[in-house]
Length: 218
Image (cartoon, rainbow, N blue to C red; front, side, top):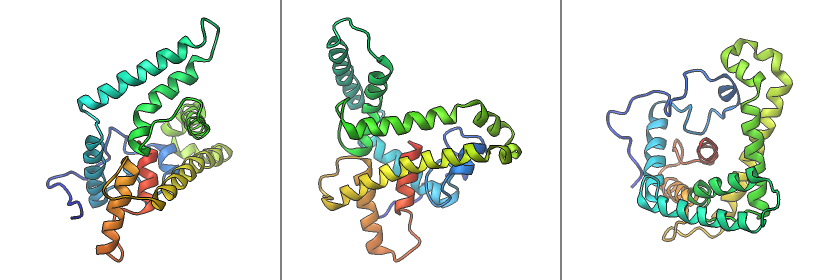
C-alpha cells in the first residue's frame, strides 16, 4: 500500500529552514526534494523519509553501535600513521560520512575507496561554496543575486555533480533491486517507486527527481 499523508500535518518549510534561503532556493529543483516541498508533496515525502530512516536505525541503539564501530576503525586508521603528520580532516570527514552514507547507499566504504573519495570531494566543495561570504550575503539580500552570476553558475555545476553521482548510483541499484532485501534508503525508495508505478500512470511522488532531491537534502 502506498504511503498516506499523516493527518493534521502542517504545510510549512520543515527542518528549521527559513522561508527564503536565497542560494538554496535559487539552485533547488522545483520538482524534487524535501526541504522546500509544500503541501501533500511534503507530507508524503516527510513521512517516507522519517519512517525509512527510523527503519535503518536513526534514533535507535543500532546507530549508536555503528558509531562505536566507526570510531574503532577511525582509531586504527590514525594508529597506522605511527605519529607521523597526516590530514586528519580527511579521515574525520570520511568517518562521519560513513554513518549516514551506509543508510543512504546500503553499504560502508573504506576511507580510500575511489567512489567514496569522489563523493566526499563533491560534498566538501558544495559546503565550502555554501559558506562563502558571497553566498551568505546573497542569502541575506537575495535581490543582489544579479551581481553573483558567475558564482551561481559554479554552484549549479557543483550541485549537478552531486545529482549525477546519486543518479548513477540508483541506476546501478535498479539492475539488481530485490524488494525482499532492501539495503538502504535509495533501494527502499526505488521499491516504493516500483509499487507506485504499478498503481498510478502519473501524478505520483516517488519519481527520480524526488529521490535525487531528498538524498541531496540529507
